[in-house]
Image (cartoon, rainbow, N blue to C red; front, side, top):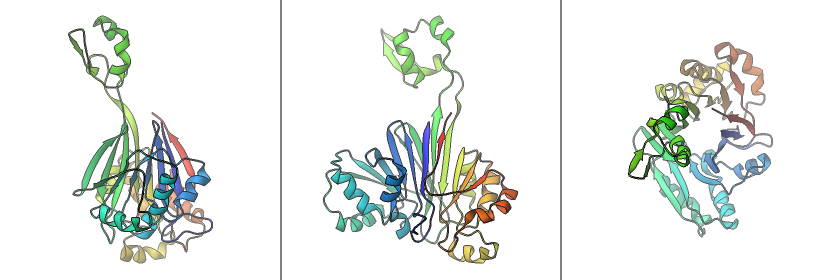
Length: 300
């Protein structure tokens, strides 16, 4: 099960009723944070989740509304006596940017591991899931992210008995592990059927529509996508500043055949996103206007 929370749904500046865009997921005892704008700590506290299990923080790009909350979060983690390393993932220049921000958070009781994304796509394996970064189209280098959790094939009990595989090894084989014991080697394919559908989450903000988004969101259980503008007459502004309208996001969701789409990263001038959703759902019926602390549990 993957817990997903859209901590904040605003773009550019935090508002009294809308925090800046940040996403947090929880899986198997670890937490992933994507983007960390001003106020992210408050959003996490309002949700009632903990900073402690955060072991990976990803950044789509280095505009202030996506990274300015990082120094304070690092200090909070340090004050909580964190000792485990923290991994940061982001575009080229990540270490330089974070080092500059850490002028106000110089001493931490834990190490930071930097992973700067190379090329147009890069995949990271960690904590039982796969994280793929893919380049999008903003006015600075920017990436979207897809989180995938694989699901092994069904365990074939009859096959395990027939092959005389000792019962204590079954759970390891179910987890995809190879077991060597008693002079024999047992591999998962001996007792598992074909791989079943897993869980897929795709998140992207600050971009024009791109083929990379369509391809990487294909078949996602949840697609969280920027919708900077709900007003149809702001299409030219969206093109100029390399953002998206609600309707362009809905078209991407339709093309990628996702199960559900949440809009996020609203312009500060947009007050009531729901007012535009009837027209959005004409394009993609399973669209929702994202809200702060909007949550879902994605299960197999």
